[in-house]
Amino acid sequence: MALTKSEKILEEIYSELQAGAFGQPDDRFLTTRELVVRKNISLKTAFRIIEKLRESGVIRKVGRDYRIARTKPIQKQDGKMLQVFLLSGQTSNITNLVAMTRLWWFLMVLNPQQT
Image (cartoon, rainbow, N blue to C red; front, top):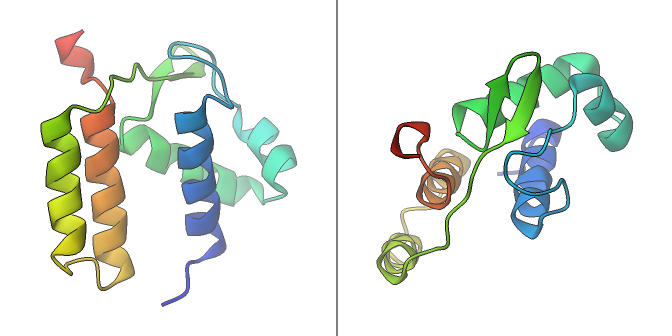
């Protein structure tokens, strides 16, 4: 099943965030308008992507800005759990792949209540 444009861009942003392309934790993330220009997308798509990033805990709203959430290193057990799930064949459709991406980010991002 092919990914939608929003899903492709969301995956790109996840990878760029992991690589530090948008800065360090607590740095300001792009505004919706900056995202529109940078990714050549509509404002509606940018709002949808920002909301998905916020829901997954990758970014958080602080005042009028969005900030990159604090990340923690992958622990061996967390990585093993993800590897077992991926090898089990349960990622046969895009819904499961998106769910696994969210789980992976949850394991990578500190819960604000824990900081």
